[in-house]
Image 1 (cartoon, rainbow, N blue to C red):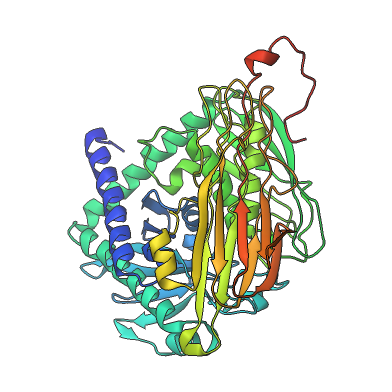
Image 2 (spheres, rainbow, N blue to C red):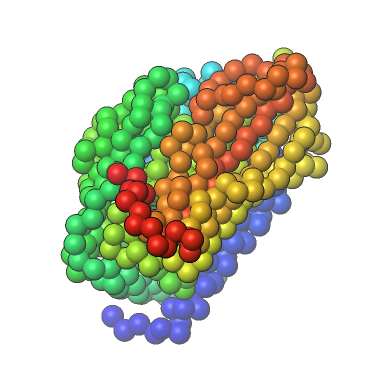
Length: 529
């Protein structure tokens, strides 16, 4: 195959820009603050077999999981122009239930050439807990499970989906409004690619994949051959089980990488179990970070990577397991263990541990269907320091990439008042280069409501590298009647009007011995083993 490098570069950038345009349409069409303001969504394009050909720089856990599982979804349907398929099943291409995916086929002169897709985190999808992210012990209790199904057939809406939302989901009008915004974003992808000739588009897709595969192999070839092992733990599953060990063995051989999670603990009762698609997304993210920015964002860059897991383990949960926190918390720890392993091979390129959590906060209230409200947010923290400098402070780390909820939007839409929002100075690990600081965020609730917290690194601090010190662990606390008390990393409880929740997020690990300690021979093990 003859590849025109300039044409492929232009084509790749055009596809990426199209995904960004899809994201802009989704953002400005959505109703909920979680999608409109926090931008908790992702947009991507796929070829006719369901292989990823382009994505925007949105949410890593969304896009990596779609790259892994989309081809299985599209193969289930006999597609027609005007079809729209919706799903959220974590064991059929999804991540966790709040992440709903909308897919539209792209036809050129009656020939199927690809797919336009969006995935967005909806503030609620039913279940026992507001926000659908409590401490449930089964997938069925976490919310409404949508196996891949038609929403539109040849342009005609199928009413069953909307009816089921009104029966099972809190604030269904908001949910359906956001879903319609996803459909509008997908339609932009369909419209833009329809400008191409069918044969030319297929040829360009093939060339783009070939170039991407070459980049992926070059990336792995630049890592020294060897076997690199690392282990770290989740503190608990919120249901009394823990610590939970995640173990990885990375084998680099020439242009190939085998990532083996054998030895990881079995799946558990609480919601920290990880579907295989989420584990794959975490692995893909780490290797993608080692590649140059200009590498096309396609599935082909991951062809040289083999993932091995044990079915029924924490990183390959069986169907029916509770997975709400697997997507947001366990994915972060998978990244940590991979970085810990690769730091042994390429220490100059790998940072110390970041905060290692998304600090999920979910409030929900309302005593009637028409005034139910749900607020969801993930909180930034410290990135790990690295050989070239300090870690960033108060940023979303690794598998998430959302914005915060602005004070004005939060107080306008919810019975909440923000009492504090600041850097958590000194929370980053010390060293030659300091880990980034976490942040402090404190809310006052103005009416009784339900609270769920899903967070990690509350007892096990983010590790440092090359003699750098650990970052400070996170702290969750509540104030009632003027008295502060600690909350565990994972919990669900009721709050009363006037209660205050304060979350202090972890700092990143430090890198290298600080100058005042250079003369000391440190025997401390900061590798997480």
